[in-house]
Length: 166
Image (cartoon, rainbow, N blue to C red; front, top):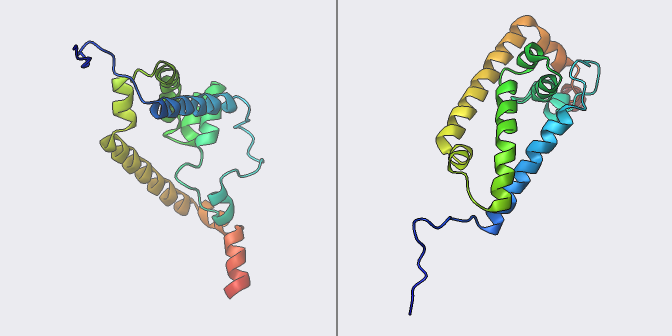
């Protein structure tokens, strides 16, 4: 009787569920980049697409990422950084990871570096800390400029507050 124990040279394959997750992530990345070509980031009189900002008047930590991604696809690098300081970095990460995620999903062969970064808790903690820090600085700057109060005054949340308790 021969044993069919895996050898070190045998490729390790992902489970079908992991492969589907990789394909889904690749599809989301590709759709995000494709959609970035369609939206006009320089149009400031369009609708607010962030539900948190629309309701409260406060920007969420991700506010500006859509415009930043769109500016990147249009070649407006300075505007991309101005819209959200982490936008160009995240755009590059999405662009660089989309194809390897698709290849990984189709072949079911995991990419060690990609998975080590995407599913790393230390990387997630650093990213969350940087995003929170940036958001706090942005809020402080908006308070100092007076723009934050202006947005809050016109928000549905404040209008609702006044109707209920005002």
